[in-house]
Length: 120
Image 1 (cartoon, helix red, strand yellow):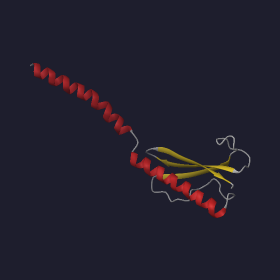
Image 2 (cartoon, helix red, strand yellow; image 1 turned 180 degrees about the vertical axis):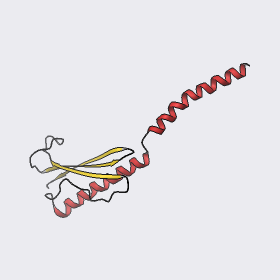
Image 3 (cartoon, helix red, strand yellow; image 1 turned 120 degrees about the vertical axis):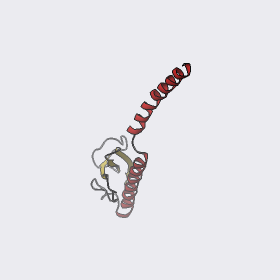
Image 4 (cartoon, one colour; image 1 turned 90 degrees about the vertical axis):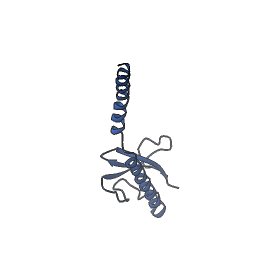
């Protein structure tokens, strides 16, 4: 009889620990999709830097991404001038452009990569 009571207590404790654990794991974002989104964002930033090297500082602007997106992913590129004193504040034309690339996926939401381009 004591063995049965101990068995029931062990099963109850195990269930109390495993149920929240399985719920948290099932609710977490898929790390493979997250890594893929990061790689896509980095590839788009690399293409933007290559565009700056080839065509200069001027043509870099907001708009559609150059890197083709696999099914389930979308990409947006936002570019704005920023002053050297505050790289988070868009404003009038300067020698610095902030480039934000946002990759969106229904499972993980948004992943944003940011870089700074200079007119030098």
